[in-house]
Amino acid sequence: MQKKAYAFWDSGKNDSALFYFNKTKLLCEPKADYADYYVGSINNIVEILQQNGDYYEAETTLIKAFPYLEKTTNVKYPVNAYTFMAYNYLYTYDYEKALYYHKKALKKAVSTFRKARILSEIAFVYMHQKKYQEAIDLLEPIARYKIVDKITPSNTDVQRAAILYNLGLSYLYRGNHKKSAFKCFDESLKLTLTLNDEYELIGNYHAFYKYYLKYNNPELKKRYAEKAYYCAKKAKSATNEINMLAQLIEADSPENSKKHWKVYIRMVDSLIVSRKKAKNQFADAIYNSKKDKEENLELKTQKAEKELQLERQKNRNIILYISIVFVLSAFLFLFFRLSKKGKKEKNEAIYMSETRISKKLDAELANDLYQTINLIQKGNLEQNENKDQLLNSLENIYLKTRNISKENSFITTNENYISELKEMISGYKTDKVNIILNGFDAIRWNEIEKNKKIILYRVLQELFLNMKKHSQASLASTTFKINEKNLIVTYADNGTGTKNNNFILKNGLQNVESRIKTINGTITFDKNSDNGFKLSFTFPI
Image (cartoon, rainbow, N blue to C red; front, side, top):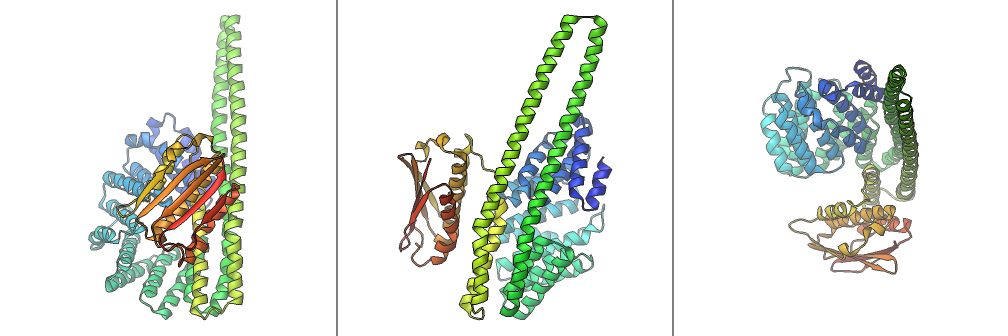
């Protein structure tokens, strides 16, 4: 089974690979005796799920391997498991948990090469947290020497190129390291060119685009933006192709940017459709593997029933035989009833999720795309003001596209909702920003509908994110109260205000307003405040 899975994986048929990895996992009974196969299969399943953006299913699957990590005979299995869990949290923007699992992997790792790789991945998390000096402190020591992979020597140059790439970006973002950043990028590119791998070259050329963007060399900036884009096309990496095309639009002339923009729109639409299809295919594969497990259990039950029937026939114990038949019948009835109910609930959940995502795509992207196309067709892009407006629109579309997966992630609406909502809000509290909640505990949260809880969670998340990015506030407060079966929420901070910050009003609060309207709510905010920012919204509970 495992050989078949790897064969499908190597040929790019990930849905078939996923099916056979699941088959392998189901055959590992008892799990403790086949811990290597069991954990290894789960790690492979998780890698495929992460490649397709299904992070919730990946985490749920990976947790099943943790009780058997200590029973494996090869240290690579627990190291890989902890690393995949760290990736999962990195992809879902929980950087502290990502660091926690990378450090657990580091403690387990044995070889110098693997330890260096994990240190590079920890530095990469620091880069996402904008802790560039911490990243530099980790990367500089391992970049001084060429650390060889004794098991797979071909990985040596791949890893060194990645370390230099991360170090170069850290230098670039940290500032005052112009020569050091260029040296790292140059050496990383030379190593990658020897690998004959177009996918790896995307990052190298992107790094030089960033470098010349920062140090204001339009000609070289455009050249490397083109190189990154064409490498992404050759590598057939749709996501990277879209991202590199976006930077080429920024770097190229206004006339060429119009042509690139038309291609960009087509590719974004195509990517959304293809990802939705891929997600459905993988959902089917996961469902089929679970169904296969149920069928195996049913066969085992039937076999046991036949053996019991033969034994009872020998003993001619009619009373005991009738009792067994009754118990088994009741068990099978309950089993099929619960199974049918579970399938129905799952199908309804899938339908609701697809409907919500479809509406969100239409609500959040269609209008932005239409307005941006009009700007390109009607506006004079040679003027700095129009070009800046176009770039802001492109950035907004890109950010919304990138965040669609994150915004549709799972939110608990049961009794744990209160603690998770508080935890999300407290995440924006820092040494410089104090957050006050009034009336929170007086609300009967269990009386509020699930979808409205989710909308409230997302709205507050958007408000605090805007506060963090734009307002420079030191104090923010949120007040909750009930009035005639309506929940009234008032948000205020002492930041820069909104009178001279039309960009935030137009873009940052657009999502908030649209979300509130979907639950028949209303929103009001003060557009003319010089000192601080305030808004309130109301919706029926």
